[in-house]
Image (tube, rainbow, N blue to C red; front, side, top):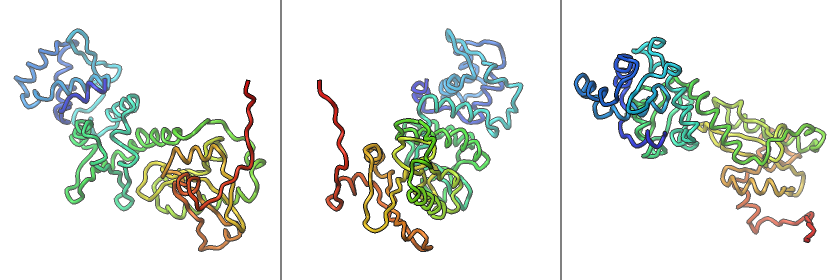
Length: 331
C-alpha cells in the first residue's frame, strides 16, 4: 500500500483532507469514487488535482474502505462525530496511525533517519535535515508541512522543524521504536546475563561505571541522557558494554562502547564476538581504554578509539596474539 501512496505527488492539504473526511464522505454510507471526483470538481475544484492522492492516503491509514470502485468511511478507525474538524490535525490521532503504518511498512526511518533527525537543546525542539529525506518521500514531507506537524524557518536552511506540540508524540511514536530497531541490529541474542557481578572482575566493573559517568558528563544537557546505559548487565553477546550518543544533537543511540581496562601496559582481550560486532558497526563502535591507576584523577580521560576493527584489528600498530584455538573433528 505504501508504494501506491508514494506514486502520488500530491496527498492534499490540511483543509482539503478535512473537507473530504468531514463533509464529503459522510454524505452517504457508500459512494462511487467517480461521483466523489465529480462532486469535488464542481464544489471544490482546487482539490481535483490531489483527490486521488487524498483517497489513497485515507486508505493507507484505514480511514476508508474501498471496494468495487466504491468508498465508505471505516468507523472502526475514523468517526467524524468523535473529532473536531477545525482542530483535528492539532491532535495526535492521525499521526499515531500514520506513523504506525509507516513503521509497519518499514519506512519510518526513510522519513526520520538516524542521521536526519536531530534535537536542538536551546530551542527544546526536534528537527529533520531536509537533505536526508529521499525525494521519494517528498509527498509525505509536504503533507506533514501542510498539517503543521512540520514547519520551515526561513532563517535556517535545510532544517524542517517539528512543531513543539508534538514532541511527546514524536518520542513515543517514532524515536523509541527506531532506537529499539537500531539496538537490535547488532545483537546476536537477547539472553539475559543473570550473574554478571559474579563473572566480571571487580576492576572491569569499575571501569564500566567510570565510562558511564564519563559519558553522562560529556553529554550533560542531552534530552535523553537516561538512555546512556550499561547493556552488559542485561544482554549477553551484545558485543559492547554501553550505548550512548555521539553528540548532544544525536537522537538515536549511535555510539556503542566496549570498555577495556589496564594498569601498566596498554593491552586487553577482545573476543571473537566483540570483533565481529565492531566490524559490523564500523564508525559507530568505540573502544574506551581505561587506565585503572588513573581513574581517580578528576582530569583523567580514557583513550577513545573509533572503528577499532580498522584502527586496531587491522593495524600494524597493534600486536595481536591467539590465546586459544578452536578445534572441530572432521568426519
